[in-house]
View (cartoon, protein in one colour):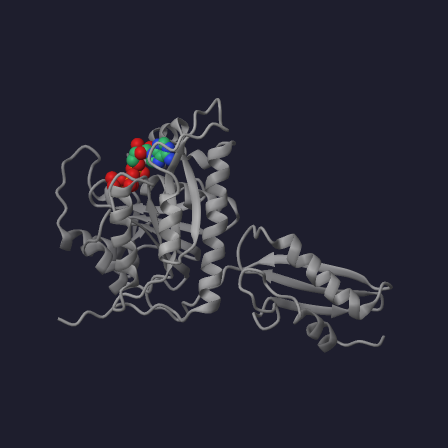
Length: 364
Ligand SMILES: Nc1ncnc2c1ncn2[C@@H]1O[C@H](COP(=O)(O)OP(=O)(O)OP(=O)(O)O)[C@@H](O)[C@H]1O
């Protein structure tokens, strides 16, 4: 045999991750190289679940190694994944790899619909997902997950009450709505809501999660500040609809995360209600709120466009009935699955290329 493990590594160091644009070896994605009498094997650890580039990366690895070992050796390439994280030794949420804020400038653009479908889609890809509904003005996640009359279990650990998140459709969730009966008119005050959010971080049993999504209230509020002051946020997803009045507010949302004191990377823009499509004629698209508003916003701020979600009656019905649209088959589900793929890719790109986010310290 005229090659060694270091020859295999050298060959694999010519293969780049197409998203991160760095080689697999320096990214730590190659593990367990084995060289047998007639076999060479190794594991490629992808950075996102259900990576759409999996087959391309596998083929590139095969080509690179084949050039070194020749044709008489069998190749065993094991493709697996592990979501990356910059959070190590964290005191709060130690088992959570990435915290993702989902924000919108304007109310009613479908932020909670997008968050709930994104959470379920990521779970369907095989990721471990949690969701905090921090929307004090209208906590709608319990309805969208069909658990509005449930209460999370609370257990006592060493004299401290620990909340056990409700688990639905493969997602662990806690909502500010669980703290008040659905029909009661609770006027939340900033400080009350902020302390509830902090409690969801410090006193809830989240366990190991790849992604913890935070559904924020629309606009910019005390809750946003509490979030960025309490935990390092991996990145923000900004949801908008395409019309001018929504975009103007979405710009403010983007600008808030990017301001130097806050400095939370924008993972990208989601354009919800991008076009209306009748369910029976999915190829007919009507741009009733204008065309490409979200896309233009992403270009202006040089941030990724994560997805365009159609305005479809079934998405509204799914939200109201508590079974997210992504659980069913069809073009709406496909749009949310693509969104999840793109969010996971952007998290991996962000973790490979940028320093970890620091919690914000406000000087008063
Ligand atoms: N793509 C879509 N197609 C059809 N209906 C949608 C779509 N997105 C959202 N909706 C509907 O629009 C309404 C508002 O959505 P949602 O509650 O998700 O918005 P939001 O931005 O979270 O609102 P809020 O500002 O109150 O937090 C809901 O009835 C929802 O079902």
